[in-house]
Length: 105
Image (tube, rainbow, N blue to C red):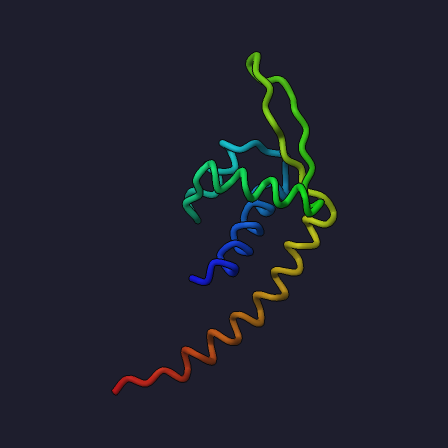
């Protein structure tokens, strides 16, 4: 898969994982596991990129005596998910065209 396409897909997956409630790294990985395999290092790179893009915010809170970072989706992050849904319609249309043009000789 094209690396840029995959990167965009992973960004949206992470945003979708925190869409309904704030979450933290381990839980995000666990929530995504049935859909996509994601390493911690990849996740934290994505989270930093999304934070830089103002698509999420980060707060620290104590949990079991340790600080844990919680990620919260912003209006821009929600907008990115909606943009993705619209863009994906075009991708599906292109896929259907390519699939239709397959020949079985």
